Image 1 (cartoon, chains in turn green, brown):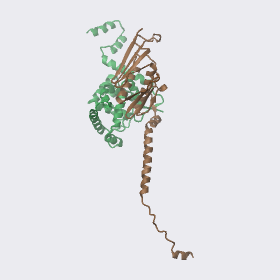
Image 2 (cartoon, rainbow over the protein chains, first blue to last red):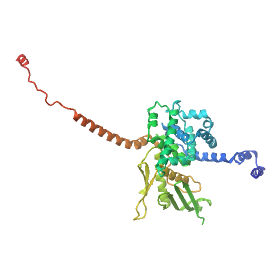
Image 3 (cartoon, rainbow over the protein chains, first blue to last red):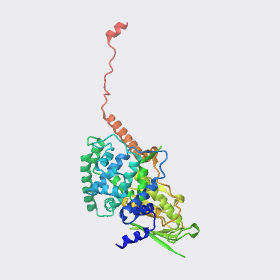
Image 4 (tube, each protein chain N blue to C red):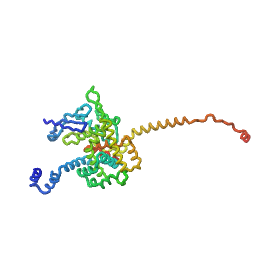
Length: 220
Length: 199
């Protein structure tokens, strides 16, 4: 009650546009959302410099799709969390609609339902933001899998659970006739899975998002 | 004089900075503009301390290494004046710190992937913190060229390929040696009938 009265009194003498502007940023609209929007602005600031004389890397869509697949492996019902996060960060409707999001992910040529489309730099930037903030939430789990300081048996158990779930997701969604996918499924060393986890761990936070974004482009 | 202290903690790494606002630069009360000391604690290794230059060298090396690692490149990075070196060490990473003081042995720290990402995130927190107004001489996160990535990734593969080629050559040539050769073939003289014809 007190919080509500305070800004109202302050706004009593202000002009209408100012009031609207204040309403957008005030606690009445929702501080949590504002926090995320501010965060997203921060994220964009590192990419705003733009990459001159750069092109999107060939494996960018594949890498991003696999990173989301790892997120889905680590968290059950991760897609719902992804949509919620996308909404909180302030991403476009493309990232909050299931169908649109699936279409974006189908730009991965290794998928069963490959759409022969490519990602735009805006889509890449948004996906990087989304992955980076999801990785930050899942960091304790990622860290556990990457750590070599914990007991071997426990680590092996964790890796078994993680790899079997990821492999089942891969067989479900990827084109199994492709030799690369078969090699991923049959790989017992899980080298690529580990690589994906390392990428996720290094892409947490603002600095991590900048790093991940840079890795998805190539200089001419 | 206001003495400020900020701590950046990320699981196994903890970085503490002490300093004061640079009033001549227009820093407000809660901003560090002049760094007086820093302390880095990594679990399982000795505490690191030094001047701004040392921290800058550490940041240069760690952030460049992480940037390369995210692109799948594993190579050694050495800071200016060779104070800090980081190189791949099996599946882990070896951080070598040379002291600027004489008669002090270099310190070696082995980091696994989780510790490396902790340290990287800790340094990320520092470089993007608005409360720290220090100029860092750090290479920005920029994309690599295709040729650079290919040359960096394929170096070890090229060596392995050469090794396999040599082994394959030796094994096939030794197999060829095992094939029996017929040394006792008859060298027949030309027949008489043919001689007669010639005559």
